[in-house]
Amino acid sequence: MIDRLIILGATGDLNARFLLPALVALRAAGHVGDRFELVCADRRDWSGEEFRRWVSDQLDRHAAAEPGETRKAIADRARYRRTDATDAADIASLVAGDDPVAVYLALPPAIFPGVVAALGAANLPPGSRIVLEKPFGEDLDSAVELNRLLAGVVPEQAVFRVDHFLAMTTVQNLLGSRLANRVLEPLWNSANISEVKIIWDETLALEGRAGYYDGVGALKDMVQNHLFQVLCLVAMEPPLSLGERDLRDRKIDVLRSVRPLTDDDVVRRTRRARYLAGRAGDRDVPAYAEEEGVDPRRRTETFAEVELELDNWRWSGTTFRLRTGKALGHERKEVAVRFRPVPHLPSGLGEEAEPNVLRFGLEPESMTLALAGIGTAARTLAPLTLTARPAPPELPAYGRLLLDVLLGNAALSIRGDEAEEAWRVLAPIMSAWSRDVVPLAEYPAGSDGPAAVRSG
Image 1 (cartoon, rainbow, N blue to C red):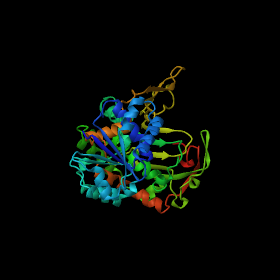
Image 2 (tube, rainbow, N blue to C red):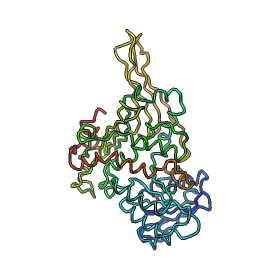
Image 3 (cartoon, rainbow, N blue to C red):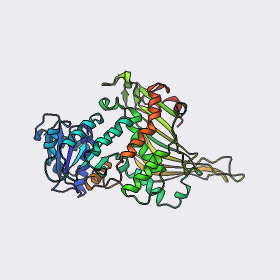
Image 4 (cartoon, rainbow, N blue to C red):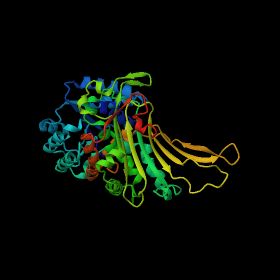
């Protein structure tokens, strides 16, 4: 297990809200002890004491449920170094030593190539690992080039292209529910399932993230990585094991089976939009184009929907709908598996039964199954819903992610060829949208989204 973690971009939102609280959770669960070193680096000219005060403040806000002494233990061992992450000399000083390190790039993806080049020149200790947040590149060409740079620094097994969705309990439960239950696996195919919806609808708006989001948009921020990863777990063939090679081989099979989209397909099967001014919950939300830091000329979308089909034996004839949106009226974060109707209803039982729908709630975590049951009146049908909630996980998603990095378990990270394949799937959509083949629709903040998809 690696005992030295270096976080580049340590004064940013990712570290404050997720990485530092995850380390507290790891400490509370006994996964990191007194030998663990936390080195935090960024451009700000802070003293070590100033940084530790900042860490304490962030942990009080974002890890308040953890014991105070555990929060203090992480804050006390956080060492700060003012660093230019693209400067080879700065990086060499940061990683110096004989023991391997895990270097976490909590940085804007646009500077990943420069940082990886600096890491390559710094002579990382043998056994070191590099962790990169999404999105991995901004298109196929940049992903290929970034993979090439990484291959010159560390072996593929030491590259962790992380996606915290894969560490979420309910996302992992997709595999468990499918593969460990005889009642489900025989039905898990197009003969029984008509549609799978993978939805991440948020009431949150931009929330001060224009510096990152306006250059990315909903399609790259959510669909290309998070929702594609969920798609892979829903649609993959059963792996021989949950080991690194078997699991990742089956995931890339799914992406390779996605039917390529023509311009006509993109028009029929994709939608994009951005929010106008409106009221979401108890707050007024300005139009996206008027948010601070947004360049309206970029025409960045805050809503994206993509319908895909898989050309393989198991899923031919099933539609996969991936959707995400910001500043919507209701939170909806789930995988909804819609089964086909029964082939025949006995006379007198009613004209039609609602399709069975199995829902995996991603946030909050839950699982529900909608069935048709006997109603209060004789020989009538009525909806019946079975609900289960999993036990709280021992670790938050980022805690599980960091533990895998420190242990060297890459099964839930994204392999280089998988990252490239995801961009290949998205390339026709990106091209068509850049040419305005699909118009950029609009929807009021706090609504159900653009009119064309409100029924979905």
